[in-house]
Length: 187
Image (tube, rainbow, N blue to C red; front, side, top):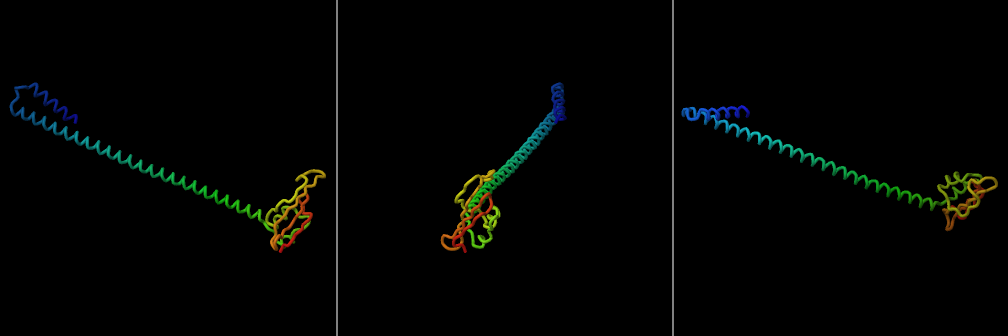
């Protein structure tokens, strides 16, 4: 482009300097050169504008693709976070239900005659609950657990029984040792 501008400047300046002293052929050649220069410069400007337009279109398309990819990634991350929250809520609800069910089973723990017969005087409370499968209902308690000296800790537990209507068993522990057991209607 610079080359053509230099030629145009030379052609124009020589036309102006020569003025009327140019021959018709020289004037026509100068006019033709000037016209070719203008056509070439115009074509170069069009090519440059087309290249810039194409580059801008490509950049806009790339930006659009990146925005779409970001939106897809953001949507996927949000969906994953939502699913994780749902999974956590479901897991919490299941754990809560399981805990309630275990608590209900523990509260409704029953004792059989076979379990009752396995219980022996002198056995610890933990050994007894391992045989029966859970704690019973505290009917009475006196003294202090882990007390010192002459302080005796006594607890009486009642278990609902399997067998006839009203079947049950009572177990008395002193300082965590079974000292007495009684049952009614166990099978």
